Image (cartoon, helix red, strand yellow):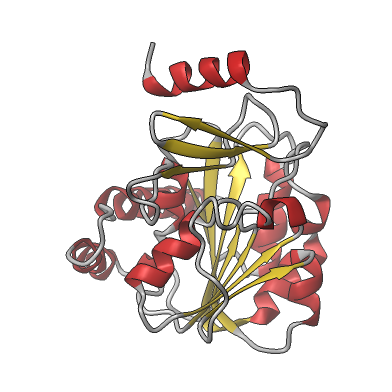
Length: 266
């Protein structure tokens, strides 16, 4: 039995019955996790290293740095256990970071997950991410969308209007990165909407976590990236991060070549 299977088996055997859709915590061998239901993990943290990215899909999402290595302003929809927020605050020391989380219960676990207090460069807002994108007047360089509820992807975070507004909210060279449940029957529709909003400047990759698929949508003239420059950027990021960006860079380039081949044939 591998670690994850053992972990989930222990969770299902030992956790109390929880109200439908209400988030709850589970701890196992020094790791704390956030759940809406026992079968799925929303966030996972090592107690001895709270800023590390434990789940593979979060490391894949950080590959937005391949497109934009030095973002000044980041917004994230869906706080969860704050894994990406904490990682960005530690590794991007000049970044301004806003997290928007719809669930007050999730925000209530903030201290358990060692999420920093609000400060000049970091804040957590309780609200609907779709409302924030519609009402916020400032631009951001990177917009991370990792919002889920018990039933999956919230409808307001995958509509055509939402993606249009994300495009408008980004700076001229900004990037949107979003996490999808790979088995979602509407996944193809979401990609089509993103392509319409971002003029086809969209690429998706698989992750170490097979249930997740990460999609990057880019604004500006630097897409698709030049291959050698993209790989060089991965090596530069590897030197300062505890993430190996090279596999993601190669997978993104492979996917872009495949997409280009399809367009050539049509």
